[in-house]
Amino acid sequence: MTNKTLKERFDKLDAARQGVINTAEKCAELTLRHIFPPSGTDNNTYLGKPWQAVGARGVNNLASKMLIALLPPDGGFFRYTLDPNVKASLEVEVLRQAESILALSEEVTLQALNNYTLRHTLFEALKHVIITGNVALWVDTKKNRMKLYNLRDYVVTRDKAMNLTSVILKESVDVDVLPPEVRQFVLQENLTKTDQADSGNITADEENPYVTLYTGAKLIEGKWEMWQEVEGVEVPKSRHQVSRLPILVLRWSNNIYGRGMIEQVLGDLDTLETLTKAVTEGSIAASRVIFMVKPHTITNASKLARARNASIIEGNPDDVGTLQMNKYADFRVALERIAILEQRLNQMFLIFQPRQAERVTAEEIRRLTEELEALLGGVYTLLAEELQKPLLELVFEDMQKSGKIPKMPKDDIHVTVLTGFEALSRTTTLNKLLTMLNAIASVPDALQYIQWDEYLARVLNSLNINPKGLVKTQEQLQAEQQAMMQQQTATQVAGQQLLQQGQNPKNL
Image (cartoon, rainbow, N blue to C red):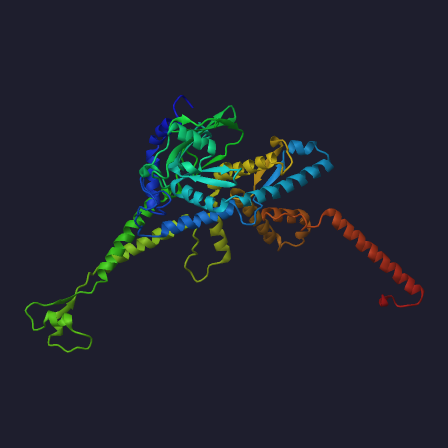
């Protein structure tokens, strides 16, 4: 990564993407301001308040739905499968053993994932991706945890195909929480700092010094070389190579730095913010009650102001009037525009609101829901490649190193993600199967041409339901048919014997 230090390289790459950061700050301002506040703010800074809550509610709703789609609560969002060429070369018994090992590996991997603090961290990460378009996660398989880095905390470089080639992380770390060998090195080199302004979100003073730690990763001949520096000085024994990068850089769009979903609707959110502020302030002004008294009349304004309820004072009712704004028509135009903007934004945020009508059919609701979910197809594809598969491969590799699952050649095993975009395609397949059945139901004798075992297998696959233990195998069906035939034969034989003996077979 050239002869420059990680700090110098970080500063140069950081200056080149200032426009992305400015846009991210604007997007956070109209949604969740704490996700990406302006530079220089800390936990004690008041971030102000937006005039509308559509953006915040939409981000939370969309992040929740994406989290359930990417990491479903019931698990089972992936499968380990053998390479087709390897599968074809194995004998039947060996293939069964291999598939059994892979099924066991899936269970062990799921248990390992449950030990990580995944859901809360991923929920926050998805908010960052939606708002700013970018976030980085460091998966620590040794401590079973995941750290989040926002857009200001890392820089990246990519090739023409948008593949990651290098990444630099920046973080402020309390000296007391550093590993012993690193802490000793930092104190010997006198690299600690105590200025609170540059310490990020940690508390710094003479009693709690900190350091700015840079972590670099560079792709070299198919392997990642990683090392760490403190204020331009490389940490001893920190340079090493890994086959899989533990840093996951997530994006909303396929750019060097992603463009978030909020940027796509920034105009609507900005307009909604302005209109909501105007209507709110106008409504507050219109809600004031001010009485006006004609000058030089017998009605005394002071007595009127001091009068209690049901009091009697001298005056003329025609001398008193109420101040009115007469802005109802203007407010109505603004409110109608606000309603249109909210409806449009709710659709983008997958907040489903059926049309107002006397009859809204279930089919109409289903189709609209599918259309809204399909909007995330491209995002699911990108997150599957940059989040789900790398995360599973990291955990799988760690399980193999620790001996919790048998070691197998990594090129022979494929990770198949069953959620996100894959789930959308399976839903489409299920709808086609159900539509086909309804279409041919009225055709005479059409159902006899369907192979029901294959139809059932496709339905279960589209629902992501494992048929093992649920659906009878061909061997079980044949055994049951044979047992039934044997029972019928035995019954017939017994009936014939009773007839020969002159007894009624109905007594059986």
